[in-house]
Length: 181
Image (cartoon, rainbow, N blue to C red; front, top):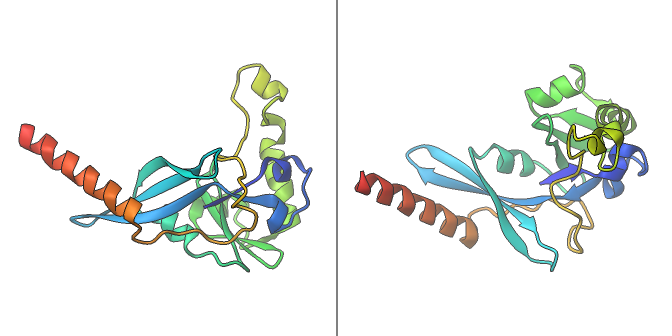
């Protein structure tokens, strides 16, 4: 799952996929049975590995991330729960939150999108008056860039062993709790 970078938001980076997007999570869809699904998110660690960052109900995060390609990456604007696809130099919304984030437009240029997010978040970055006065911790992507996140290529682990183990553990815990009741 890719997110926009702080440098892109602040206007320090050019509106290109290489400078504007960073890998924040690896997403793995999990089918938990009885028509329930989840997404397991793995975040990069400082040493170059991965750690369990979250388990979210529904497979929408993995579904949106899975629509991306190396040429047309998909990214999120987490503050709005919005998903977009970058095609050439156009940002296209993939969900209702993204449509709202673009003011109802069917697409905008990447430079126009940068202006939109700069207006929304640039004054709320870490170290800003907004952050230092205690209103918020400021905008910061979920994960810091790591050595293996240099290009915006989709990273989906469909049916991975990690996801299967986590799903199995969650189901076992749920059954154990039901049995104890």
